[in-house]
Amino acid sequence: MASRSDAPHLPRSAPIEAYGNGGFAFAEMSHRGSLLCLPDAMWAWPVTRPEDIDKRSLERVFDAANSIDTLIVGSGTGVWRPPSDLRQALRAVSIVVDAMQTGPAIRTYNIMIGERRRVAAALIAVP
Image (cartoon, rainbow, N blue to C red; front, side):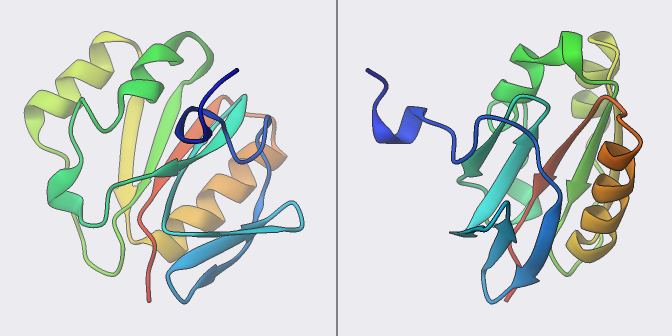
């Protein structure tokens, strides 16, 4: 049996219905903290600021690379540019990264999953 930290919040992807107050609402659930949305599950994500986004924090994305074409990164309320080494590592597994503030990232993610695109999202919670 998987430990609580190794279990997804939801064993599938779902649109984000609301965000703010430090969390997200999706699939009639709520989650406090940042969120990693993969094609097959939605996970708690321990990242709280863009500077903490690296290959290690995105390990689940790299593990699922064969089912992802685009990674949308919601960087909170600020603008963040992925470091070139991270961008190159994602490109090496055929994933394009697109970073923007969390609000626009959620809207983009929702549109892309609605179009059944192969998308993941790494979303930093906003106050």
